[in-house]
Length: 515
Image 1: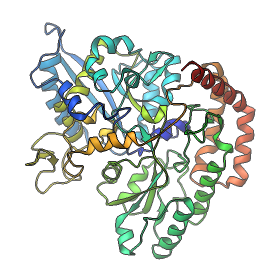
Image 2: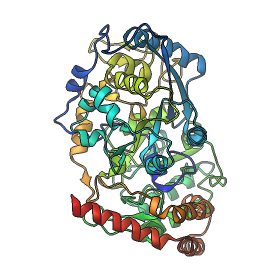
Image 3: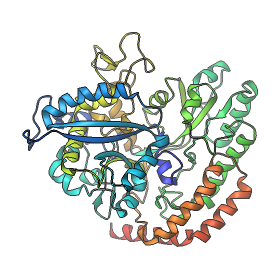
Image 4: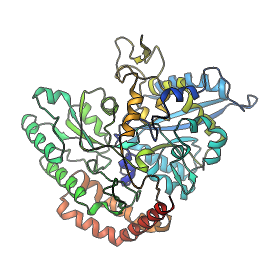
């Protein structure tokens, strides 16, 4: 997700990506109350647990967009979780929380070496290639036998098993919003300082004009914290070609697969960013920067950043990512849902797991336990949060996100935030609002389709190498798009992009004809 990876992987992590929060592939038929009713109650013994065995330790890796709590704080929370899981499952959890800046490089290395990871944050964009490489366990039978609470937490089994390749289920989606939406976030203090109204901003030209105004008043501030993951976040598309070039530019009305890098939308993004880069409004080292762009908002170095997410929790999520900095969100388009956006993050079981059955039992327990999910997301009651008179969670008196020992506030990348108790600033009905948001989304005509890159694996690998040469520099504005986009596309064609586009279109047409 989120670093120097292929397009759809990074598209997924915009964390707001990647920020993001919401209910993946869920509808109003499956309410939060239903999920909580399905969960285990405290003290209820899990069926089929053999307490005569030595406890099994489940190694779980979770990705976060920014710095994670220090190890001692994580261990403090895990100690509480293990008191529960040891009693109910005869298992313990070994949790590793890793920032995006190093996470996916580490995961790739560990998967390829057969490391003993049990459960980990996965990304659907890489699912097919990881399946073909033998890195991931097929979870289909495991879900049927040991994942009944997981299956019950989605509105349908089809949605629960959306991360699959020709029936090989390689993950279960994180419970979050099913859509992406082009957005931009501004520091509220700067808007208020100069009495700036951003309610009518809708286009890149509008943003450019605002940058002109603010830059004149804040000459030492970058106007944009460039996404060091390399995302064209104003470009609406369904990247059906996964990590290749194939995309659908009008997913609500078309199923034509085209080369993203030949589109007017991609050129517009690169052109504006190049202008801002040349003006000194973007970090001059953005193309090679490994620092999270959130840190530049937190430090006051940058005025704004783009995101893929505009759902009801986006602003709160991004403020958490930025260390509590007050932000103002402006949406630049309608929410739209694709196969990848509805299941962008998921939890997978690695082929290196010593006991996939126990890994599935632990994942099933976590996804259905309010107590464990509250611990993972919010920390320890009385130390990291308190329950107010309305039954919502808040910081202990005199504390905030920067002073409590543990507060992920990142339910959007945890297994199932919708069994969590809501945070006071989100409101008791926040999860129902996410469901309504999902129901309002534009649905891609290619929803449900997953491209299998195996038939064109050599071409996809060659395309990946070409992308590594040009994509990041283009996307952050470090090079002139008029000069480099033609070179980029010429080399992509030499690497086999047209063959890949044809294969993506063929597979998509076959999928649609069989629906």
